[in-house]
Image (cartoon, rainbow, N blue to C red):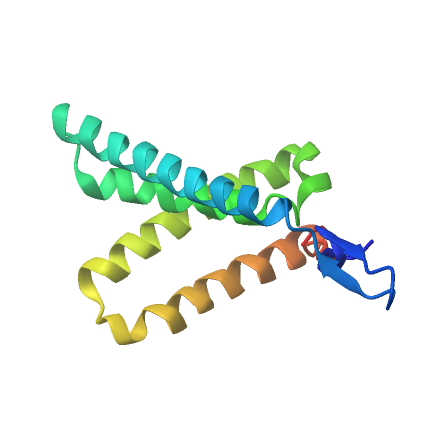
Amino acid sequence: MTDDEVGKTLSAETHEPRETPTREPWDRVRLVGTAVLVCLILGTSFLVADTYHISVAWVFLSWNSIWLFLILRKGFRGHFKNAWFTAFFLLWMAVHGTVVVMLMRWVRMLYWVPLMGLELFVGFLSADLLFGIRPDRKAD
């Protein structure tokens, strides 16, 4: 079953996929619930940082690093067993968070996407050159 076929059933007349009417509302409820949960978690982290007088830049750096891990974990799933790769990835997360904070602080918005693309390219290239690995495209 392909990703396009998830949530669809075959029509008896034409044997073509059609949307399952009961699944669509629950997908929207889950989507809204996830969005509310993310807002609560992020808002709470900034509120706690403000309460304990932690710079907002540290919180932003941390969340950028965490999102990098969440986005790339499936592609590098089997490689985290290697301690050297795990150390490399933790360093990459720290560099990525720092680069994003520095871009927001000192670089005009026009250059953010190309410079973040360059930073991610260097990270992927380093992973390939140092460990001979590439992210698994099937995981996406």
